[in-house]
Image 1 (cartoon, rainbow, N blue to C red):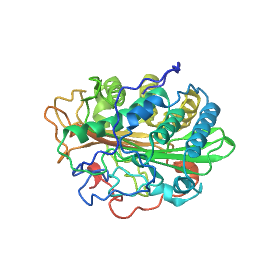
Image 2 (image 1 turned 60 degrees about the horizontal axis):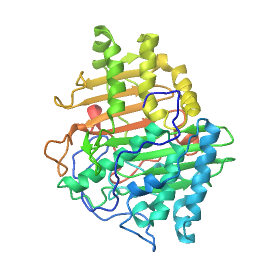
Image 3 (image 1 turned 90 degrees about the horizontal axis):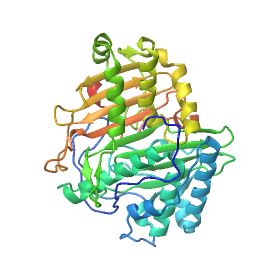
Length: 409
């Protein structure tokens, strides 16, 4: 999802997304990821459940948005959120709305399955098709075309595993939505949306004309799959392409410094000190290489409209000289070989960690990469502005806390 200048008015949606299939994905993960445990689903329920409704049909029916400015995105997302809230019962509204400064927002998202970490808000599997469509309209109003496609492709991967693997995760494909603060274009509020391989925390502030996605988790499993329409879907192809465009732009000496660095990991649920360690710094890069690095970071930091993406990009660029990048694993984008890549980007205004997960127990599919290249967890945080500084990260308990990766498990 590199920066682009033209935002199309029609959203492209490839993956078919199914919610409510009962399967359990058991994997030994780093980055506080997938592990075995209870299969009891958590979260709120609705008396108007419609389990046969699919998120794919709801995503297709969601009203399109062509916002190109921060103000337009905030207004469109607030309007979509209000429209969604209007479809809910009083009990459901109470379940989905939290105070803006409620610390629950820091512990109710994870890269663990929802059977391990209870999510805030409403489970989309408990909603009617109309309500699901309205919920997905919130996500579509918030995200750019590329980001919306990535998000729905990630959910589509969960469906693929549910239908084709021997996983027994009862929560595979379950996704939750919650709001912290009343959705409005004249005040601050957060949209929280996610499940196992997706955890979006977007804070929108109409008073400051600002949007931040810190912190957010994007994950993928498998790397490539065929959806119900027979189309090939590769959710992280854009991220991989940007990562290797940056790596390939480096000189041999720069690559040696990069790969000799310390790949760090700050997992969801961790109160991190964001130490940078050794590696290649932004000051070591040419102007072209800096732009390629910023393109890579934009896959997480620039998930909304063009203006808000440019604002965040400029903030990250301002401290890029002291930002440290480290890399381990493969050096060629070829998913038929090796075990994938790990990298971290750590600076005053950005933290990105990309972790190839080697565990794939219970999610194997013949001929499909569901480990290494094909099972990745990532985290994006802003050491200076997580949750738009509305709350401080709380240390999670149970299955969510703890680090992982090359520096710890």
